[in-house]
Length: 214
Image (cartoon, rainbow, N blue to C red; front, top):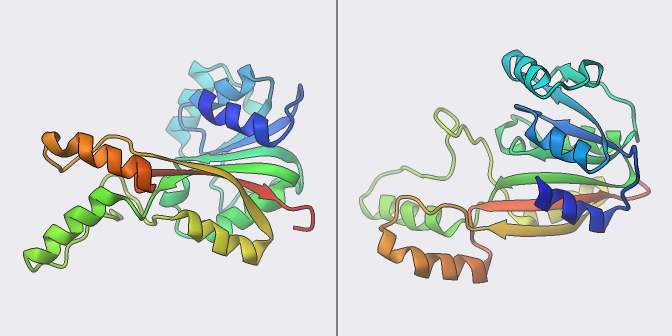
C-alpha cells in the first residue's frame, strides 16, 4: 500500500494521528501500512473470519475495527482525512450509495481512494469480440456468480459524471495494466505497450476529494 499512501500524501497534508478509515480491512495489510505512515487507522469488515484473523495476527486495537458492512455502518460525519475502499467497490450492490456514505464520513478536503476494474480494459474488449464472432452472448467483464465476483466496472468518466451529482472532484488517478490473461503470450508485449499508452489497462485507481460544500 506504499504507492497509494505516497500519492495520498501529495493530495492531503499528513500529520501525526491523522484519522484514516479502511473499508473492508481483509487481513489488515493496508492497515499496517497506514499505521506505519503515522495514521490513526479505523476499519470496518463484514466477514467475521477476516476480522478475527486480522486483529489476531496484526495485533490491532479491537476497539477501532468493527464487524459491519459499509451499508450498515454508522460512523461520525466529517471524521476521517483519508478513506480507502481498496478492492471493495466493485463487489458492492450499491456502490454509489456506499460512496455517498463515505463522503459523509470524510472531512472537507479529505481524500477517498478506490481501486476498481477498468471497463475500458482492452483484453476484455478483445475477448468479447471473439464471443461475438462465434455467435454467443457471453461477456468476460463481469462475474457476479463466480470469482472474482465483480458486479460493476468503472471508467474515470464514471466518477467525473458522478462527482457532478455529489459535489466531489477527481483529484488524481492512474491505470495499471496488471497481469494479462486469456491472450497468447507472444502478444503480451504489444498489448502491454498499447494499454500503457491508451489507458486501457485492467485496474483503475482513483483519488476523490470531498469538496468543502459537500
